[in-house]
Every structure is written in C-alpha cells, then in structure tokens.
Image (tube, rainbow, N blue to C red; front, side, top):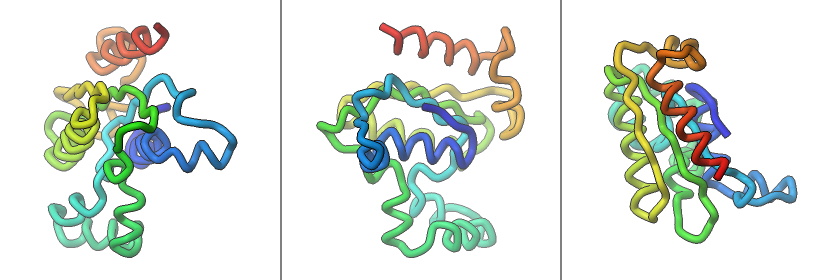
Length: 153
C-alpha cells in the first residue's frame, strides 16, 4: 500500500490502524509492505506544533480536535502484535517538515521491531519525488524496486 502526500498519511494509517481493513473483513496480515511518499502528517499533533502559524491552523482545521488529530496519526497506532508490515518511507531530503515526520514514523516502527527504511530523495521537490517514480536512474525508484522484491519473498 502506498501513496504520496496526503495519500502517504492515508497509506500509513491503513497499514497501522487495523480497523480500516477489519471493516472490510480483512486484516493487516494481507499487507506485504507500506510505501508512504513525502507525507507530513504521520504525527499530526507534532506537525501542528512545529509548523508556521498559517499551515498549523490549516492542519488543525482539517484534522479537527486534539483527539481526532491523534486518532488520524499513524504513529498512534504503531503497537506490537498487529501484523504491521515493513515500511519504505520516501521523503524530500531538503524538507525538514516531511523529514521530521518520516523519522518520527520510522522511529515508532523500529521501536516495536518493524523494519522501516528511510530514503531521503536528494534534489527532489514534493512534486518531483512523486512524478519521477518509475524513472530508471531515480534513487527512490531503485529503493522501491528493492523493497518490493523483498516483500515478495
């Protein structure tokens, strides 16, 4: 399961909060891996606390109450015993906000023994990290193929 930007947050949420799959009669055990790409809301309260005022107000409005912000944060749901899959977390190297969020998610996953690889995409923007996926010489794409090959085993 993967996604870019807001889709990265949603992909990470589906891969950590098993309630979404359970609603469909499925479990996290069917997921082979998660690939969030340059998300900035794996820990919504943290993001709101470090963003410039206008952006933090936008996120606070979008994610609702502090309780809702926590529930919509993938890191909240990272706990042992849930079949959380391995993660490949791609992010723009020069963006401290998405870099901080990527590191926060990876740390939470690693803390409970889940494999979490971070790939900082040098020379990319929020748009090009996504647009360049699939190009032969693209570092994030190469990491993605390696990750997918390992997930197939």
